[in-house]
Amino acid sequence: MFLRYDNSITSNDMKRFILSVCLVLFAAFNAMAQEAASPNGNVKVKFALNNSVPTYTVTFRGKPVIKPSRLGFALVKGGDLL
Image 1: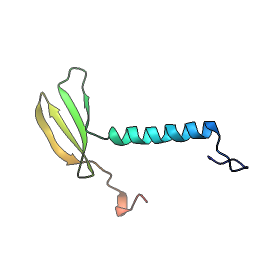
Image 2: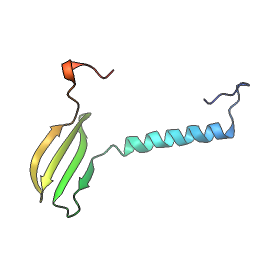
Image 3: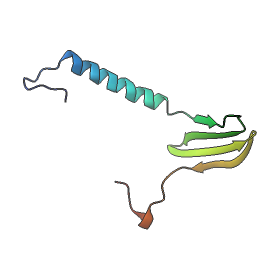
Image 4: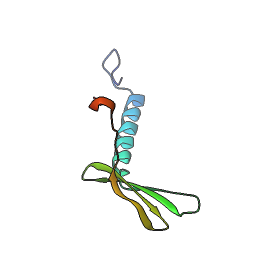
C-alpha cells in the first residue's frame, strides 16, 4: 500500500500514513467514558472501560436504573469471535 514498484514512498503515501496514525491516536484518547442522553435528558446511558472491560450504566433522572454492567456478546454454542 505504501511502497511503489520502485520502492519509493510518495508524498500522498506519507499523508495517508500520518492521517492513519492520527485517527488511531484520536480513537485511543477518545476511548474515555462516553455518554448519550434522551432528548429531554431524563435517561442517560454511559459507556466506559473499567480494567479494559467495556461496561454501561443507565440512569433515569440521575438515579441508577442499571448499575455498571459488562457489555459484550453472548455467542450461541460458546463459539469464539476469532
